[in-house]
Length: 256
Image 1 (tube, helix red, strand yellow):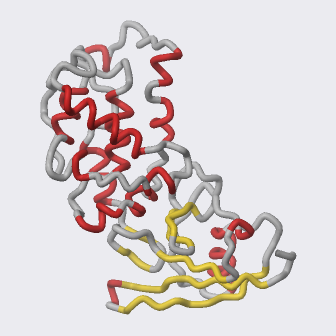
Image 2 (cartoon, helix red, strand yellow; image 1 turned 60 degrees about the vertical axis):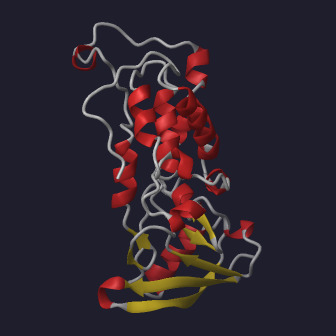
Image 3 (cartoon, rainbow, N blue to C red; image 1 turned 90 degrees about the horizontal axis):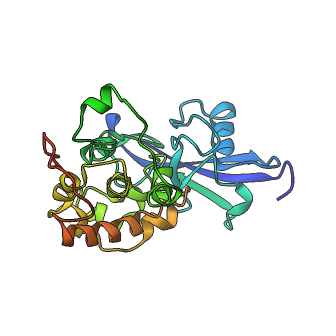
């Protein structure tokens, strides 16, 4: 694409507060070298229609704020180059499986509730060491490798948006939360494995996944939540003796 050539951008416009149905507004955005989809949407907002609702922050694929559906696939708008998209028309819309706020902005309240339900932090039986540590929790490089890949999650929500199970079962905890559950279970410093495995071993937990693999396909950081889910299933089958001696801490986790 040449500099100055018009990019045909279609932006979903919908506002549940006013009960307006979804329509698509088209803009001709002049292309610039290195232009991303986020750049194009912000150009349309600045020059054509200030009322376009969009969420973004870092512009460098670190915060996960600008997730949206781009040409039918959940992507980060700041990470997606215009030249990477084969279609002459670029269509952007809100992420699926999230309540719509307006236009391209969705409500992530339920997403973060599910994330918090797996206790995404180090759990220890010696709680005094959490508040008044007397030494470091040393790890070998091999122990770090067990969970490092799954710690790259930026909570962009693309995996949940791509998951077909989320459309059939809104109570399904989702690949993001399950991936983070495994991240902490695999961490040698953590002792809350039994608590988490018990929490996800239910109707809307780890067994609800159909293993479509869409979550891993769209992840911009290579977290591979589908792999984490498979590992969790194995651990769930062999608990309570695995993966290590972990205490049943209180209060118990509650997945709604």
